[in-house]
Length: 474
Ligand code: NAD
Image 1 (tube, rainbow, N blue to C red):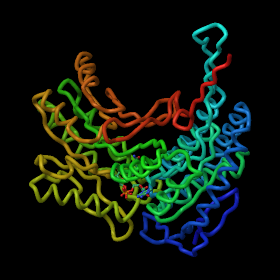
Image 2: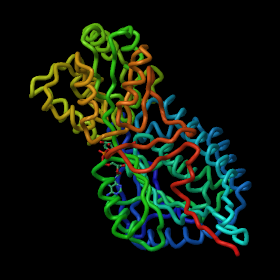
Image 3: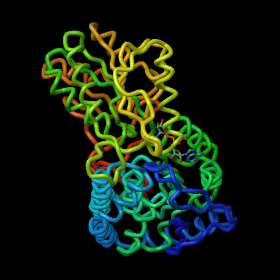
Image 4: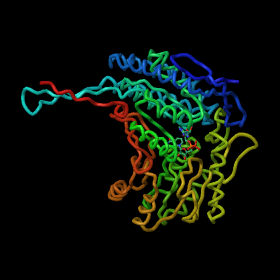
């Protein structure tokens, strides 16, 4: 049995209140370890130490910070097989996807390292020549990061890369379901030379930990990746104590397939994208709007390919899709599919739990979906594709934009005017044109509408973790 402990000041410790919870292997449904809960005293210790960590780490010259973060990337790459295996065990994804995620986490560290070395300020002449104004960039302070279970390392790595690159200290509360991935990431940072007081990992009941930390005077910045309802709660709580937040929240991405596309080739491409990570991706394509002329051929091919996906344990070489991450997610997906079925949708393939053990759910395709079905309004966050037919472009665009989500949208057409028109029309932060992009460190990802607040990555990866000061010299 594995034990996942708090990591404070470079040392592991069990929570001071003696509370633990089991950690399950999604492929078997069996507990393979347990994770400790931080007591209030542990959280206070972690935050007090992070205040010291801020003073120490922000004093490291930016060039050296960059060197250390680059080294952490190299260490992650050296350990990617072991870290990938540990991730698959707690999250369920196929091993090659887990290893790719460790590589992506290293990419984020390299990007943070490079941007750290580019921190600059501005100098202005004042309104008269005796006056010089210097605009300086400072680390914002101690960061509290709340990270999810779907990409348990990469989504934390973005936050560590930005915060540490900017010179902040950071305490992360990962999802209880996937405690090992962030611990592995932070161990690599420590081994690379990040000051132990600058990085902490705590676990516990999410609402207790987040509330305690958001309200603590030691914390200056909140960053969260997760669902819209939880994001709203955290942002509201942070607002009461005037603390800035970055929120990367859910999506319900429209995919528009136009009549000029080869429906079979487009379906082949989109099946792979849809069922990656068992659909548990905020950018996952979910609402497919297919133009009538190609609808039936697209559906036929998409369903045939989805039905052939090999579902199995992430550690089995032949598995193309692993289990869902938790039993809670199986229930959530099953509820959405049953609701659609009860309201008259056709289950073209899938629509059921698979196997006698583990959290497997069949790749599922729904068609003939009535507008009132919950799946058309609520983010599925699982292996379910909802396929709709369209004739009228303006009406389809209205529907595609009608939800509170605004994270991403995907367009499939080679008609240049239509590409431009549809890309302009989508009220989202990420558009793929004949593409379903993943999040790369070099591009900023952020949601429009209720999908989020602020961006992560891109040239501005450090910005959420910085504050400015202008100094006027006379
Ligand atoms: P959930 O709303 O229960 O939890 C979402 C995440 O927030 C989890 O990681 C959880 O540990 C954390 N969390 C929950 N309550 C919290 C609190 N009070 N304080 C701090 N953290 C808290 O949903 P779920 O069933 O775990 O996941 C499904 C939903 O989460 C999906 O609908 C999806 O929108 C969202 N999600 C989004 C992303 C993303 O990449 N944007 C990642 C994971 C989950």
